[in-house]
Amino acid sequence: MALIKDPPMTVTAQPGVPPIGAVIYAPGNPPERLLADFAADLLARGFKVGGLIQHTQRAEDGRKTDMTVTELDTGRTLSIGQSLGKASKACILDSQALAEASGAMRRAVEGRADLVFVNKFSKSECEGQGLASDMLAAVAEGLPVLTAVPGVLIGEWVDFTGGRTDLLPPTWAALWRWWGPKHLYADMAQGVGEAKVKRVVVGLNWTMVETEDGVGLAQTPERGTPACLAAPQAGDRAGGALSELAALVRSNNPFDVALGVAACNAHYNRFDLEAERDNGLDSFGRPEGEAVVIGAFPSVEQRLPGIKVIDRRPGPGQYPEEAAETLLPAAETVIITSATLANRSLPRLLTLARDSRVALVGPGAPLTPRLFSYGIEVLSGLIAEDMDGLARVVAEGGGAKDLKRFCRPATLRAPIP
Image (cartoon, rainbow, N blue to C red; front, side, top):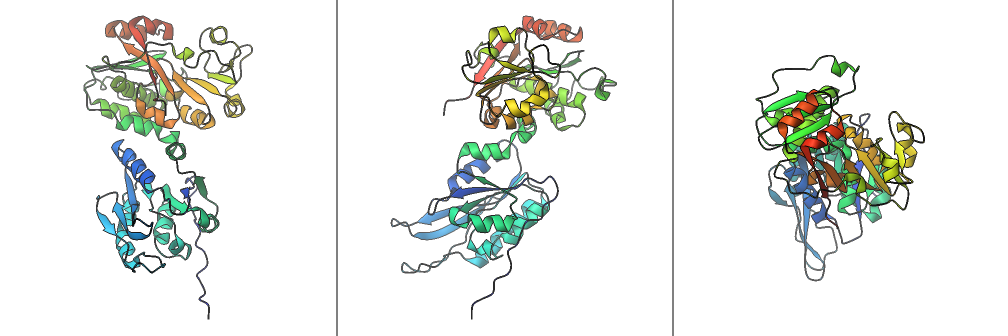
């Protein structure tokens, strides 16, 4: 008599929880190294990751000889394979060993990991066994989950997740697109060191944070917004740790976000940073295809003929910010003002421009390779040279043109793949 399998389990996620990321792979070519490297990169950047990464050992003839999993929180490696002999074609998975390893999944959920890795989705999970329940528990808790799925099981995977899945090719770029620009702020802040804040100046248009090693700028929130009525902890910002100030990028207060961005830039835009002195508006030369600029840079239409300009207060011939939804996905090149970092619109713009070459340009641009992973190809900002002069300009309500008198332009470009 045929065995009656349990009905497929499906994901019931909290509202707003991202679909499970699934790296689809061809038979015999699991993306184990890709996922291991991605987990290592996130760990190095300060993110909390948990779960399991798999490593498969094979004989010269391609036959599996063992399977191990590494617990991302402890680094411990466990064997989940069993020897069945050369003639056996059965699955070598040791279910009891996998059950022991599943403790790493439960710890990831309990510790609220930023990302939970599940080594793979296999026939065991199709039948509700293996790590199926642990995977669903992570999703039910609102945690993002990433796994690998063989192409032959895509149908079963979609049934298992109830369609709440993002199917990803096995590439580095695809993983970073899925992880997404929404993590950009946390990434920047986690890279900031413990330097002492020397001076904080909040002006009408710009916010400035200074340390012994660098100065950072960010656009001050617009006048009339609640954040501008009173500055939280005014008078107590200087003297503290730069990392604490940088952590404000996670705040819901626009004023705090500007301080956080400026603090991040004080770390990355160091006085001794070696960078090109190019103008960011020239990042991609004269545009030949569809090109869009976010932000009404002075004389940008004359500098880049044919460019489409999007601005919150569009002038003649320019587009309102709502036009980004249709213009950015079709653009070949996009230049984005660094003001979008402080007003928190940058992640959405990067998502819309994910198939474009993107430059982030302006006094508030952080000069750090960390941002290249989020689809930015060129970063063009300022490095302070006269700190006292710069502080006077900020305090007296100067604009971007005034800031440049006391800074040098600096541009970083992502390495060519």
